[in-house]
Length: 506
Picture: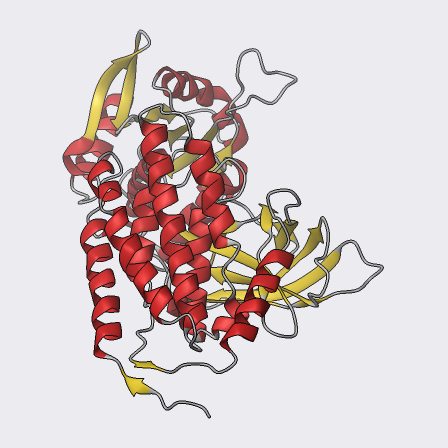
């Protein structure tokens, strides 16, 4: 006869005591001071053993066995990190013990609520990173504190306890040894038929097609589905990513996948990125899961930018679009560029573009065929100082590499020139670009700006100003036939001077 479930006060108190003890240890964890926490391991282990013993003949036994495995893995991880920090032997064995405990967790039989199961899978992924990635114990501790462990309030004995315990032991013994035979999954992803960049610049409120390939080193026996899904600290309310699931085909070694991604809102800064970590798992008919190690695209790094917003505060919508396009191109061509350098570059470029639009709109240099570079420089600096995102940080007449730099903003160089004879934009960049590139290199920067006041005669009407913002690649000594490991980029901004009245073109 089955026993009725009854509220068990001691069971509830013991679970709450364990939870409070773990939170007190981990909530403000300092990865350099792990010894006090490790000293409390026996206290937690003893309470968990009491739970496992008290529920061993009940339907809740597996829940607490899994709980014990998770906590053991966590302490093995902390002990390994502590030993590694102090150059003690045995750290590698501790990290192996982490995997050994986590791979024995039985999801299907525990019947966890779906939100908690997703949380727990994310915690396991943090504890067992792929490749050479380093485990950050602070991140693991934070993830553990966020785990919403269900609380068992009632207790019931199971008349089939012995039979189930035997089944549990058999299932554990038949589990594949991931250390000896690891599951690997090679992932390659394309967005709009281009390889996903790092970061990939996307627009908000647009749906992008995602395609790619999945290539497992082997498909585990008894598992018929392969699922790739997002797992991220970035709120799921900010984006939508769906990738089709894969069903096993005996004769197929590589699987094609399709899906889509859309970000609902733009970011507030060009220097920020959004990271979506990917989780893959095989699933059988009973819901049991095995997680392979992802090789390749284990996370997606994105920037969600809207050129209509204030990342590029030129004050002119068309010039915002021009700066946005240049920023996208630079990010794609220089994926390893320091984000801070790019951010400062964009601010200075936006300020100069603001002055470009202002001069054309208000005829600042109308019918003036002679303006000195000093006057041009002083006018531009006076304008830039008045912009709140540049202000006092613009420096004029700095000296670098034995020469005089016209403008510097957080190390980003803008060389200023006044030109009376050459109008061709490509020739202007070729003529003046080398000097700015030399200053930038001396400042260990890869981006520079050349701003030219065009004082040539204007037999035709001026072009829309966005045509006068050009991206180029400066020539570098020693790299005439080879691509440097850290290439540079340069932007030419031409400011129209010596303009005529519109009626003069009639």
